[in-house]
Amino acid sequence: MESLRLEQIPGVANVLAGVPVPSTRAVVDSSYDVAFVITFRNESSLQSYQDHPIHKKAVSEVLRPLTAKILIYDIKRSDVDEARKR
Image 1: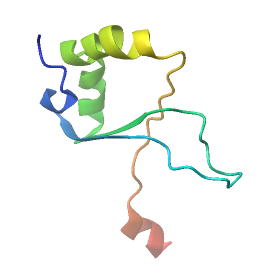
Image 2 (image 1 turned 135 degrees about the vertical axis):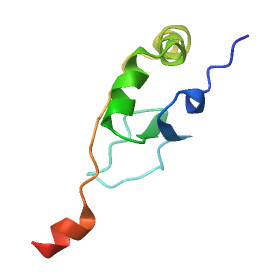
Image 3 (image 1 turned 120 degrees about the vertical axis):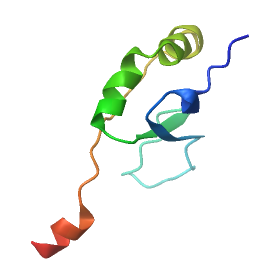
Image 4 (image 1 turned 90 degrees about the vertical axis):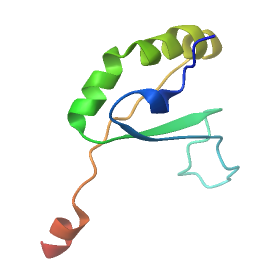
């Protein structure tokens, strides 16, 4: 079977997967079973990733059949040094 490793997609810098840490803190969202954090080299890499065949196959053949809900948060890291100067 063809590999569905997301790290093979150009522009993907890092892929982490994990499960929630048990918590009784009210501010912690524990409503999920598995989380992925995918870091891209830049915003254009994120855009290219959306259309890449490996990503599309992973979504259609692995994620959608196993999940009732998928949430995605696209964020841009702020420049910490610039924020400190303000």
